[in-house]
Structure formats: structure tokens, C-alpha cells
Image (cartoon, rainbow, N blue to C red; front, side):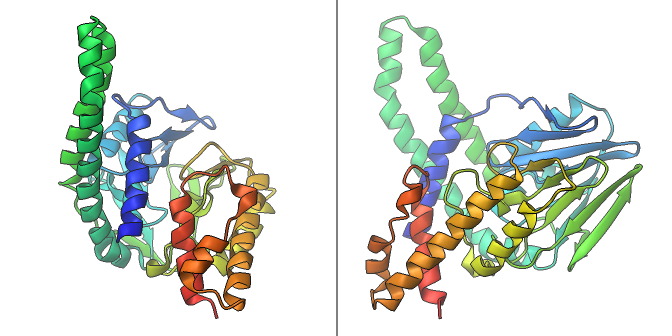
Length: 333
């Protein structure tokens, strides 16, 4: 639990740094496909003749409302479908904003993960968010006082606005409801809607045990969810059925994609097939270093100390690296 809490602390600091006080501007990918970067993750929406199709909904109802506002800045068509790339709380917290009016599509195993580990994680996340915000408020109280004493009212308001925003943000986390999918698929699902075709593929266990790749066929665009992390250590969610072995294979297949032009990832900028190769090599290197350490007879704690991944020393979220090493060590034969 302590290791997961450290991840939540990192995420809280990231969210505070990147706090959005108004809905984000949609990034137009093609004529009718947009990416929206939320506090929790990168989402996407496709405007069709019959309505809107959304991919992922962010970390909380606030993210969901911001996404809804972003969509409404582009079109007045209703959201008819929401696709979930995987069950993690930073991607599903805003789903309830769109359901039951929209139909939720997710791969098999998704709901079990949401109601199992997802529910526990969400509760722990709320508590850790509150703790982190309390620390942030105490730390910044003298800074606000300094700004006020020097009549720097705009600066003081800016810091206080972040604190107020996250107080409201945490309140919204407390009302998250787990939404059961309307459509569940095993290996693949084709959604033909409003003159568009969207192909959903379950690539096998990778980042989690229930990932989904979304192909916008006419737009030659793919949303890969968290199968790619931009210049950051990824998260292997072992308890939900992750597989580093298959994830390496999935990234190789994505890197050989020559049909599609744009790749949206869960966290980071629009990516490329070359990016997938870089992350694939990271997974290969991590697996190899853990294997060498274990074959030398090192304990799991000694392995965590020994595996440096020096080629990636500038990558953030090294607490995730420790978590991944521990899981690889314990499951490696």
C-alpha cells in the first residue's frame, strides 16, 4: 500500500502543477476527431452524423464535465457511445457524466477490475489526495501571506484558486460511481455508427489484463490508451493481469503500423511508431536487468537497489519502476 501511496503523491503533485480551472481546448486531429487532454488522461471524441463517440473520461466527474464542455464547444450533437481503454481510475472517473444517456463499451474483465482493485484504489486515492492537498495548503499559506503583504493580489489569488479547485476536485471524487458496461467484447468489436467505423481490439494482457486499442478507421488514427507512456516509466498492473511479455509484443506490432497516421496515448503528446519502439526497449531492458539480478541470487530488496535503468535516468515516476521491479521479481520464473 505504501508503494501505491507514493505513486498517488506523485500524481497529486502532477495534477496540482497542471491544474485546469476551465475546460481544455480540444486538439483537432482530423476533420471530425479531437483529442482532449484532461487532468487524468488524454481522451478523444469523434463527431459523426448521428452523434459523438468518446474514448475515456478522465479521473473524476470534474474531468467528465470538462470533457463534456469541450465537446459542446465543437458540436451540439449528443454523446452516444463511450469507449474505455482500461479500468484505471484516471480514465474512468468521469464516465458517469455521460451514462446512462450514452452506451459504455469495454473489454471483458474490465468491470471486475473496476469493482475490485479499482474501488480500493479510488478510496485510497481520495484519502491520499486530501493528505497531499493539506500539505500543499500548509506549505503555501506563508506564500499567500507574502503576496498579500506586498499587494500582489493576482499572485495570491492564483495560488488560492488551485487550493479551492482541488477542494472541489476531491469532493467530486467522493461521488464516483462504478458504471457497468452496456457492451462487453472479448477479442474485438466493430462499431459502425453515423457513417464511421471504429474497431476495438483486445490485444491480450499488457498494461492491465483488460486493455483496449481503439482504431478510428476513416481518420487513420489510433488511441492506444496506456499501452504507451511518453518518456516515463510505465505501470505494470500485475494484480489486474498485466503481462510484460505480451506488452513487448503489442508494442512491436504497433510500431509496425503503416496504415495509420496519428497515435493518441493516455499520457503525453501525440505519439509515433518510433516512440513505441523506445518504450518497447525500456520494457526489454527492465525485464533483463531484473532477470540478471535474480539469477545472481539477489533478494527482491537487493534487486530494487541493483536495477538502475541508467539509460532512463531522466525519466520521472521512478516509484513506478520500484513497483514494477518488485512484481517482475516475484512473478519471474
